[in-house]
Length: 517
Ligand code: BG6
Image 1 (cartoon, helix red, strand yellow):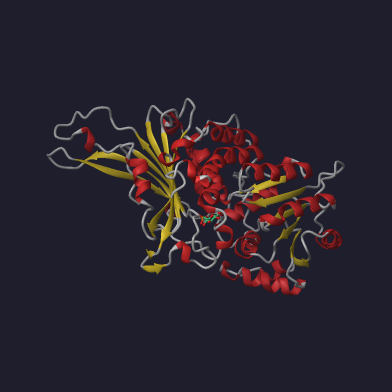
Image 2 (image 1 turned 180 degrees about the vertical axis):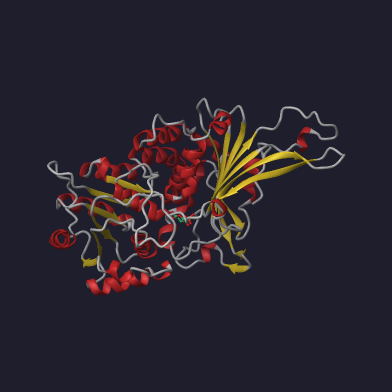
């Protein structure tokens, strides 16, 4: 979250960007260099940063993976990966900074070879021993890589110099409380917390960061941001895509782990946190974790009243016929994995006491949209003739996270004319209409922050544990269906609809309704 303006340099081909170029040279070592994440996100984002002149002049990228490739072949691979990046200006310069090494993640020999290669690359590129290790690898080799990185001394930060060694890790951060604790133990045994950057790409989204600014840089909203004025909050994270080619991962993970443990709880924390004492990574992270710890544990004996699971059947999305989840390639035919979750949760603290948060997220819903809706209380009484209180719509504040980024405040106005008629009007701001610059993509932003050494938008260890403490009992209860059949039931819903009808019941039983999106 910086505001220094980077001067236009010859590499920047558009208006000024409100970011600083990292001042220290760095070598970026990507484990899992031949995988999906590297190809789709990391390489294109690094290239974009390079084009925007937001990578230090002295840098290199070393890809590491099992696939056999030479440096030259890797450069071709990099070139193909960033084909979609549009403008290819400076590509040949960028490629000169890319290298590759193949090896087995578990074998100590690989790390010896990395050591040797790094020595050479550090000399050529003058990176002064600063390193970022990006672990874009499957969870089953996570521990091995962490251990080897530490054992080989590759990720050691020397007490006698200011060189840094940072480790970036991707979710899933474990699959339940126990495995998360084990992962955290192994991270803590091998690195210090200031070396660890746990990525949640939602925190890299401008609109998510803006929740913080919106709340704490304006006095008028903070006054009403509590249970005196807010009736309830709705969070929707809808996707029109299905499981795509990720069945291997998703079918053993499910939507609760995939979206709630991380992205959704992180957004919720931004919405519900108390103002931190200062704009400092640790103070902000302290407040986020307090919110997670204040969420009321779900009553396991009647879980179905609080959480509804669903799985998509075949149907039409955006006019295309799509198969049922269990017919997707790689998904087991009798899979009970949820692709949709609707949840009601309560935050037990002074600010939020009595304000329900209704959250829904799912795949194969009618369209891609993520929004946070703050629904305010109705006026206490209608003084207007012929307008009963039920017809007076409450104010609402809609924070559109994506794709139509912006904020809207819905208010009641008088429709012009002699008769008294009210209408809901929306006061809107859209990013694209206001700001001429295109925001950095989430991965660009987070990679940049990691190079700078700013952990504000990364998740801390206690945050990971707090989210699993909340969700693990739910997962356990779903596993032991026998206690109450209704609890773990996976309700079917047609692809292209807003989830099972039980999700409507979840909110309607409280006299409220999901927003029509
Ligand atoms: C990922 C999940 O973390 O986020 C995916 O694993 C999901 O299942 C994706 O599709 C959604 O991200 P975005 O940025 O497209 O909303």
